[in-house]
Length: 159
Image (cartoon, rainbow, N blue to C red; front, top):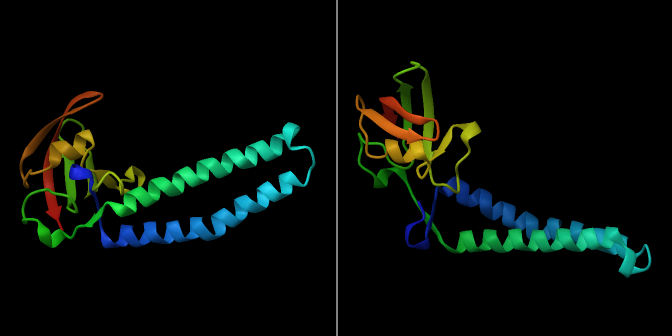
């Protein structure tokens, strides 16, 4: 959910990202500076692969910091109280059943920045996430996924 360039996050996720940023800017930068200093101490920099690797790591690390800063600058906090009850929306906890396999799944609907499929956090921008938005308990959602069209019955919606 990144319309208007905004990044929608929960308060908990915002705190995690701010903690990560602080760690990267302090200890992360110190660690990379130490690697560069160690590599520099090995002599001729023109033929020093360790120095080149450390500088490349520093460049990638600084790009990661810049990306995280960009995300944090565009954050808009969201709370479940902002949405109507009864329909699936961001921050809903849903239980669905595949009507063909009868297998049940539970997901927490989140922004793409918070998505973690292995933890049951489903991005609302994913094919299944998009197909579930706005649905209510008892409805059947026909969703186009890479493997074809799948049907899911909405079993529960919680905040």
